[in-house]
Image 1 (cartoon, helix red, strand yellow):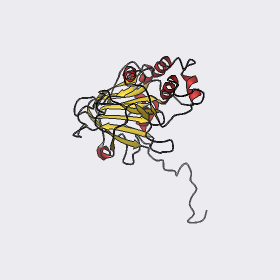
Image 2 (cartoon, rainbow, N blue to C red):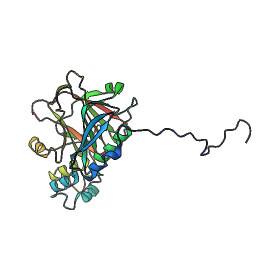
Image 3 (cartoon, helix red, strand yellow):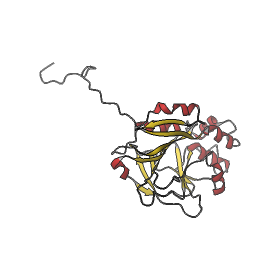
Image 4 (cartoon, one colour):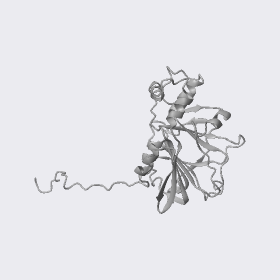
Length: 272
């Protein structure tokens, strides 16, 4: 090799990049996948928390509710609809004993790796008594979603597929409990609901639409906690709350439970 030539890369002269560590120990929540009806105690930064599955055995509840249009079960319905579903335990809810700052994303709007993994396992992560750390806390806009119009925030070609919704306890308006909820369903639920109401043909409807108008007020109320996951934003005044979902697997909407007002605009940001 001539003087000044670049030496070939070998195993000995490659400098490894440090591994990116996540906020949470993802493996610590594995017991909830096996026993979704139980609560799990843990801690972060010296603060205790309780973690629960928001809707246990979600796949079974969906299959039972839509048995008439999915007689061969969830797997067959997902195959026919060309919609992926792998979150039988839907929604990971983590409630901290006292207000805790969480580094949900960095300054480049990149989602924390452990939260990314937990969203993949549970469909969404919901943090109660929590705020986003530091300057990243200010990186949001305000939004009110249409009542029971389930939709995605970002199309399939967008890099920032993760939606993060926040209630800031230091905001003069958001510090109060909200009068409307944000509600979530897995993509397959929208397909099944459309087919069951004969608003779509099971033999021609494929994939996920950008938006759907699903359920009516009375039906939605009956399905909360069973088919529809509700983030109520109703914790006491001065409580921070955070929700993170993947737009590729979960649809969301507002549920106007008072039937009078949709409540104040919630914080929204879109993460990579």
